Image (cartoon, rainbow, N blue to C red; front, side, top):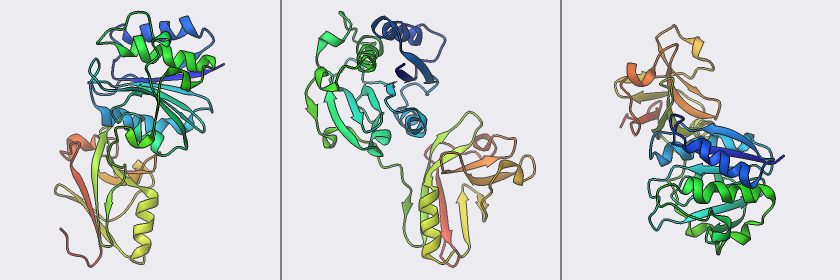
Length: 271
C-alpha cells in the first residue's frame, strides 16, 4: 500500500486535516496516511522544514510527503512536486521542502500546473485540500510527476539558509532553530561538524555560552546531571541542543528561537 505522510500547521481542532485525508482517499483508497505532525507553529516555515528534514529518512521508499505550511497561499508562489531517489515531496515552493530535498538525490522537480489533477474548484485559501492532497494521491496511485506541469531546475527553487552552524578554526556560532514541546533549544550544529571542529584543534577543551550560561562538557543523556540542571547534548537527529534535566530549558534559561550558542576552543578569546 502506498504511504502518504502529512505535515501541516493546521492543528487538529478544525476539519482541515480530515478533509485533506478525505480527498486523498477519494482518489487513492488504498493509501496509508501517516500524520507526521499538524502542530507546526502557524506560518513557521522553518519549523516545518526542520520537522520534515528530521523525519523523511525514516519512511519507506516511495513515501509521498505532502507538506503544507503556506502563508503565501493564493499568491503567485509556486506549487511543486519533487521526486528524489527514494521519496516524493509535494508542497509550496517557499523553502518548506528545501532541507529535506537538498540532502537527497533529486530526480525531477515540476511546477503543479495541470488542473486535471486538482479538485474541480480551487480555493485561494486552501491549496492543501484542492491542490496538494489530490496531487499527492495521484502520485501514490502511480502518476508520473512529469504529468503535473513544467519541469524546474533545483536552482529555481526557494531555499532556506543551510542547516549548518557558522564554523571557523576557533569559534562556532550555532543559532537556535527550534524549541520543542519539552523546551529543549535545538541548534543547527551537527554532530559530524562538531567532531571535525574538535579534531582541528587536537580535541582540546572548549567552552559553550548562551546568554549568561556556560558549558564545558557534553552529556550523552539528560539524566547525567541533577534534576533541574542544564546540559548540552546531541539529540536523536544529531543536532546539538540545550536542555534541562526534567525541566524546560527555554523557560529556565530564557532562550528564544534565533538566540545564538557560541563555542570557542580553549585558548581562544571569547567573542
